[in-house]
Amino acid sequence: MNAKKQDTGAKSGSFWRELPLLIVIALVLAFVIKTWVVQPFFIPSKSMEDTLQIGDRVLVNKLVYQVREIERGDVVVFNGAGTWDEEGVQPEPSGNPVNRAFTWVGQQLGVQPTGKDYIKRVIGVGGDTVECDDEGRILVNGEPLDEEDYLYPGSQETHAEFGPVEVPEGRLWLMGDHRQISYDSRLHQNDPGGGTIAEEDVIGRAFVLVWPFDRMTTLPIPETFESLNEEGKEGKDAAAAAEPVPDASPIALGVVGVLPLPLIARRLRRRASHAQDSVE
Image (cartoon, rainbow, N blue to C red):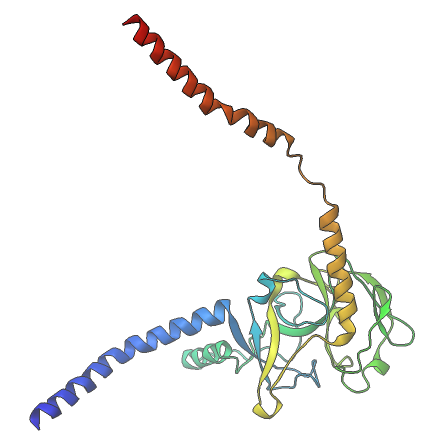
């Protein structure tokens, strides 16, 4: 009986000694996943309604753009520090170090806004021409978008004409789904970048809404962007195919010239050996 109690006590003591290590390992794994793979984000404003609402949590894929290009229609999270300083999304600073620590943890877990990261939909990529015509339609490369599926009701009626705007290579034109209140590329045209943001400032693609549970859903690219994205891929493939292929002649000649050298060296060694045998 006493042996069983001692054994149970030893196991319990071992658990409590290992618990701090397990916590550290869990935190390290969480940090690695958040930094390089998937990160949760808190939605702080109404600019993406009805797709996303205040208080929603989304998961952001931080690896996807390592294997494919950013595409029109993607919902992306990006760092807008210094250029996209929207009002009402900055967290109130606290003088209490404990509160600051809890705020930081909340930001890492996606339950509090960071104040510098924003979420919008990609409308145009580098090389595109974006504009709004007198009918309130958004046109990309002259093709009007059918945005009824994802725009906040009545958004198109609030559109004001702009453009045409040519999106520089390596940059993106972004707009919110609630156009009447979204402070997006249209209203940042006098800021650095002319309303666009750099692709390198994109943190990742929001691919799923995870909270609240009753609204859990994926965030796919709307159908209206499919033809534009296909044309873009075909254009890039054609450009790649049209690039001149480096002339392989010098390399081939060099290989051909080098290949006989071992044979020639071998023959010379044999002749030298025969000549030495004859002298002896």
